[in-house]
Image 1 (cartoon, rainbow, N blue to C red):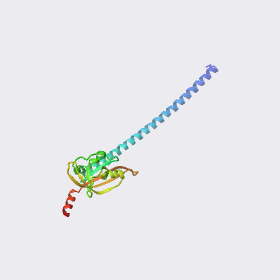
Image 2: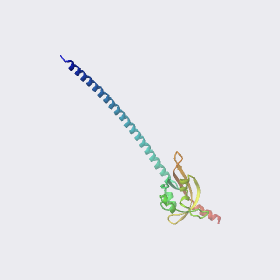
Image 3: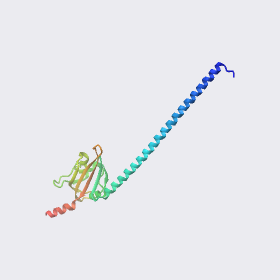
Image 4: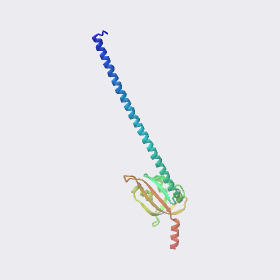
Length: 193
């Protein structure tokens, strides 16, 4: 048991270093455990958020499908356009009124043929109610337009349109409704004659 003072000092230094390394390893281990727990909590939270978002997305998709079904059931023509004017929904009644698939590209609005009944003047692309609702934000109600359908037939429609705004008031979409009033106008002309 005879340790020299130098050996004893060296033994104390190594013991102190081993104790320090042990404390450091425990601190690192505790830090790693803490980070692992935080990581697991963040992962759990993210999975919950993703699950909630999936539920919201599914509910939104169901609402969208329900709205499309309702629009498709209506006996009046319905057009929905995005903020740039591209048609995003056209119901069967609209196709029936125009006797074809309406053009979805806003650059093709000039290919629609319509006339103001009072003046006989042809509507410019920007005169259509849906376009005005998008560009000016105005709501249009019961505006009569004589149209030339894609098959060459002629009809009179009552046109309605309104912008759809987001929570901040910006126009993000628009909806237009066309009602075929051709038979009413024909009857009206016959009664006047």
